[in-house]
Length: 233
Ligand code: C5P
View 1 (cartoon, rainbow, N blue to C red):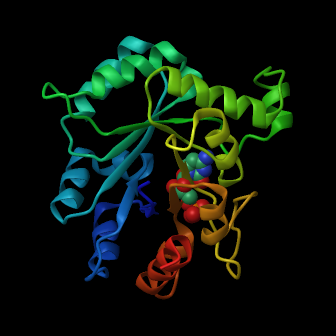
View 2 (view 1 turned 120 degrees about the horizontal axis):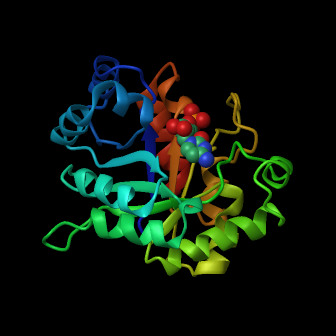
């Protein structure tokens, strides 16, 4: 199983992002580009970071009608990203369309993940506002099974849900999990957090880590600590 730490580049500008990446003179981290940076800088920032030798998770969480998502994914397929995602709530048909769009003419494509339920959504809101009449674990497992049925290789979920996703979809189904904190660092706005070591034990294949690395006094040391704790190396 691939296992790695993905650093969330939650910066408002390309200049700030590249200055941050300049610090990493040894191992080049796998990085996540989200909506803020992508909408600010566009595809150019993806190309610039790729040219520096980083693997990239483009976290744009597409959710629209299948035809629109397929066409948008076709455009993204021309960027050399390693991983990208959609919302599982868009239905199996939408996830299938996303996979078609993302597949290049030569048959290669980035790893396509589905977001199950956002970690900011709690069960009470899911029931009351989304009218989903089931508990959170069953909903996450169901969405993960839908992603698998659509042909996707994995999901983004809470590290607390990685084990149940593996149970529902098998050990090779990928789990990519944000909401990671060191035992001695602030939770910030994350509610349900796990340490890198506990996330590994719980079945996370990749952990997504933002502020514990980006806001650290020494980001390179924090990244290396994260790798050590997650990979047990
Ligand atoms: O700074 P922090 O480690 O909390 O950053 C986590 C990253 O993972 C952010 O980029 C956030 O948008 C993303 N994320 C999340 N929860 C989700 C999906 C994505 O925290 N359910």
